[in-house]
Length: 173
Image (cartoon, rainbow, N blue to C red; front, top):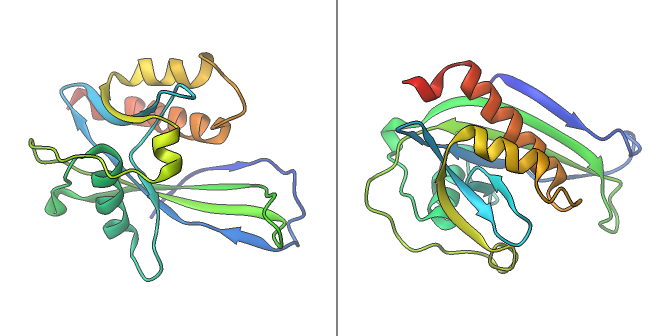
């Protein structure tokens, strides 16, 4: 999968012990809008997706996570790779010096009918709700609205992905 970019805080010892957490995210575009998850508590947008379970491949994790976070059911035959974003930053977890994450992005389509969200406790606390949003609005919110520290890397990562998709004219198709 092509490397899109890296987000590296450079605030950690690269020779230290890494906490590794790969994730997979779905990009679903329809009629000029993109399916995203809006954190009502922290007011930012993210692509639906999340961490891979042990032994789970990225495509299967993306399909599962999109359903859990957004209620959208991905059509497996529509899934195609988009790219990879690497993230590195200092970690406060005991026994680890830094956080390392590979975020696998997949373009895909979803069925018209949705199901109920199945959120983890932290996702429910963050107020995750699915929304179809215009990409420039999500970029604006992620960059300029309520820019507290919560979700800083997520905000920037998703804004950059949306800008790439716009430049590559995915919203014009």
